[in-house]
Image 1 (cartoon, one colour):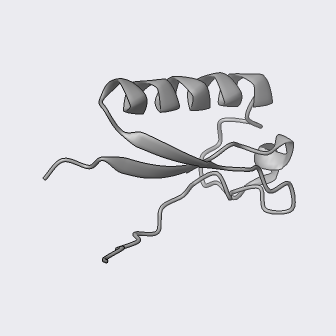
Image 2: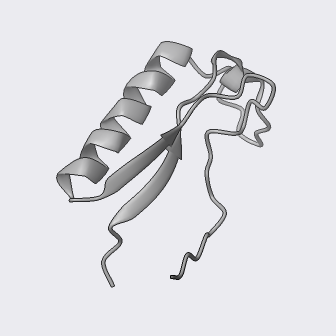
Length: 73
């Protein structure tokens, strides 16, 4: 099965306040955005159509869109 669509959410400036168990320090927002754009570009190169949601500053972890959605006619 090949996926043809994906939902992504742009990271908010508050992403550094998200929950983590890693002791790697606070994420760099500019680097996070660069990684996000690279991720999106890679998906597009693979033929995946993206639906990009806006950032949610009040929810620092909201850029991790992990819940599965099944859409049928």
